Length: 550
View 1 (cartoon, rainbow, N blue to C red):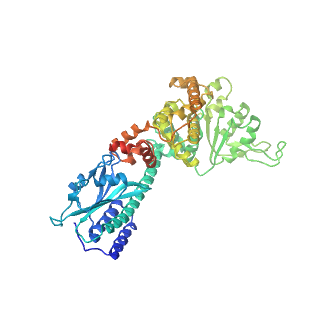
View 2 (cartoon, rainbow, N blue to C red):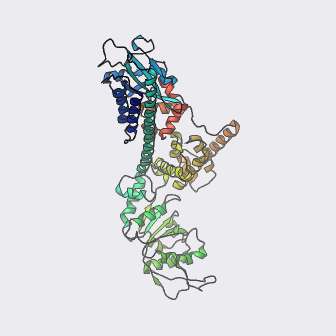
């Protein structure tokens, strides 16, 4: 493939540069573009056996990545240890200085591992030129080629042309790296969304309503909700605070035949008792002092759609009787009205209180209990949803990064702590902790120290049953409080920044990930829950390239 030519003129040099630049206008294909540049250098200027050598991401050894005019065996031999200052290529990679060998057969530095002589006279002397491919003043690779030393042509001419070519190749590599990183980010976001999908089609529908997870406990609850969604049967959602009762109610509504009609929600514990009747059933103008105009209640507004009564256990007994009549007769009596109005709505109720016990104690009407408890669905607490904490954390961290314009990631140790915690406040508490960690972290990593500190502060909030739940899972309230105090004291004593950008203990995990992925940084970054840019930054700061090469 060597094609010696007569001495090119300045005009031919310009033609070569123009033809190389045309390759950059085509759709991005690094292999095709770089090989095209090497082909032009050979065919138009006699700079043969061109190759682009790049460092192996794991070992740091410089290897031939792209080439023209070389055969497989030659390529595999073209490996140079930068740390050992091996060969001209290795020296150029280490120093960033152009390398020139006028006669490769008479130079002690030149390591003659690649020397394609097809089409070259047996007694011809070969010259070797290597120029660095630079990025921000640092060599990221080496472009090299050979030519017949006897050609009546200044080496400065060839060096200048190769420098132009190396700049173009560097641009191609940078664009390719950027596209790879952006693609990785998109894949990571896509994977985060996939992690939120549950095992079946019914659970897939729940994701759109913010119900994240794949645990059997969640799957069973979603399955029950989907089975009754397209009916008018009243549903009673039971579960601790923060388990997502309103999300389930909205999901049931959206999968029913009433999806195009209103979804009206009211929290019975959030409305004062004396105002609940007016809020629920509405009133007529002049029915009481301050009623300057008629107002429709939540029941009327839900006509044709779904009425969601959250924390129905907090509804006073007197109002329970009126609600029961509305459910039975499908008619509502606004305050001050002389005639009732016809209404048609699907009722979904929710409570964290034990309604059956309240019935036994006379605090809740038995007849209303039977009306609303047609389809009871128990929503699982977060601590019983195996594997879901990780998925929920990654999903909401992604949303928080967008909301706060951050690029925070969870370390493996921090994620492990989240999975060990009992979460008495369930998903709502988990999201709160993540939001606090996202805005508090002084670096791009939410580490175990920060999570321990935040969870230590959480122990100040006493949720009924929380201490027992925490101790059951190995996290007592006193333990968390002590952890929080210890972390705070450590910070106060040290007088240093709370978190460093890169920690030395990350080195081993990064080396292991790179080894498992055969040096593929994109896959390794995904394993470490990092972006490619973050991984590259850590490799540089921890000198992992140099260690691998040495």
